Length: 189
Image 1 (tube, helix red, strand yellow):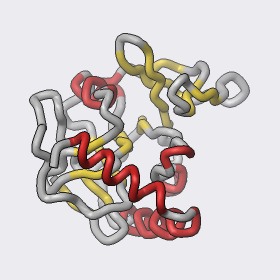
Image 2: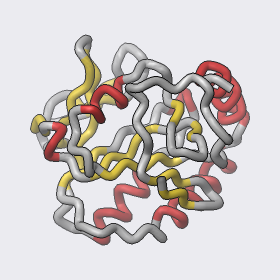
Image 3: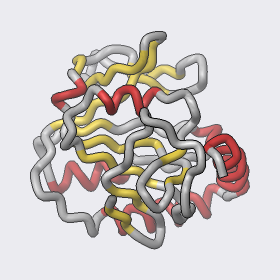
Image 4: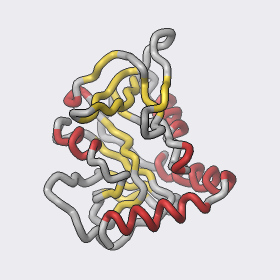
């Protein structure tokens, strides 16, 4: 299947999940995530805020798990603009959250983080394939942002679904995840 077909199919399936089912799947994804042994301690990690109307995986518990293991870790979050995407660290008392025009929770202001300073990125992932290529929401913001990151940036995609065999319409800008995490398994690519 191509990305558009996969996106349509898995968005529809994900939206049929009840809140209780999503919570159960999220807990299982978290348990799988906690089995990953990182080779180096990340100092700056990028995450995102879940889009409620897309019923997507909420990475907040993964962030908390990182904070327990690595108390000095700092999280930054994406903010989309016409030319692409930037990452900002949330600053208590200064930063807040506001929904973008697409209904995506974004940080209002914070400390700008150059992409090459980020050690780890939790990438929104609707579904991924057995080679580690993912399907997001189709705008390409993360793929373009990842091209500006270091080649050793650790990318994690969390999905409620097991990987598909392949995505038929990949292009050169598509970048592979390092880890794909599902309720049943951790896939290293």
